[in-house]
Image (spheres, rainbow, N blue to C red):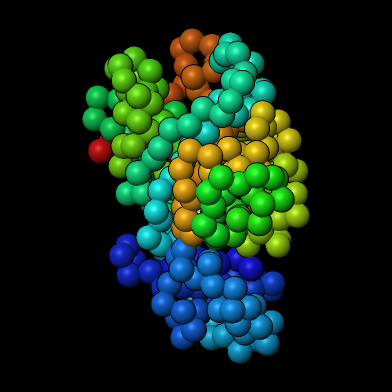
Amino acid sequence: MKLMRVGTVGAERPALLDEAGVLRDLSGLVPDIDGALLADDGTLARLRAAAASGELPELDAAGLRTGPPLARIGKIVCIGLNYHDHARETGATPPEEPILFMKAPDTVVGPEDTVLVPRGSVKTDWEVELAVVIGRRARYLESDAQALAAVAGYAVAHDVSERAFQIERGGQWDKGKNCETFNPLGPWLVTADEVPDPQALGLRLWVNGDLKQDGTTAEQIFPVAEVVRYVSQFMTLHPGDVINTGTPAGVAMGRPDPKPYLRAGDIVELEIDGLGRQRQQLKEA
C-alpha cells in the first residue's frame, strides 16, 4: 500500500493512493497513519481489503497539500557516510561500523513544503535518502530476517544538512542536521511488501533542474537489514520510529570549489524508485 496524509499542517487526514493512482480517504477507518497503525496487522489487513474492494471514498487531490506520511514519529536515527561512492567523493575512509546521529521529529515536513535556509548559513546541502519506517518493537535483533520483519515500510527522505554547522562549529553533527524543515518526508509510506529488495532502488536528486545525485542503494556500505539490526543493539526501536539510511554521491560538499551550496530561491527535486517524488523551494529562515 501507499499510505499518505493530506491536508493543511496539523490537520492532515489519512489517505491511500490506490493501484490506479486514485487518492482514497482512510479517515472513516483509521484516525491517522502512525506507529499504532503500523503495529496493528488486523487493521492493516482491513485497509488492504477496503482498497482492493474499491469502497474507499475518493478524494479530490487538486490543491490538496501532501503532508508527511507518518504522524507522531518517535525518533529519527540517521546513518552517516553509508555509501561507498559518497565516501570516495568526500575522501573519507568507509567506516567499520555504522555512524549514528539523530534528527528531531520536529524537523519533518511534507514532501513539497518549503525548506528554510538557516540564518547565517553558507553551506546548506542536499541529501536524498531511503527512510526505513519501523513497525515492530525491535531490541537486540540477531539476524537480517528479524531486522527486515521489523520494517513496516519505506519512504523518500531529504536529509538537508548545514555543513558549516555540522563540521566547523564543534560538538556533534546534530547542529547541522536539526534546523527547522530539514527532513522533508514522503509523499508516501510504501509498505514493505511492495519493496521486495531495498538494496535495488535508484535514488536521484536535482537542483534547479540539474541532476546532482544519481545513485543506487546497492552502493550502501551497511544494507538496510544490517542497519536495523545494528541500531537495535544500542537503542530500542518502536513502531513509528524512522531510520534515514544515508546518501549516495553527488552532494555539494563533495564537489570542487566553489561548492554549489543551496541558497534561497533554489528548487530541489528528488525521487526514489517506487517511493515517489519530492519538490521543495528554499527560502530564508
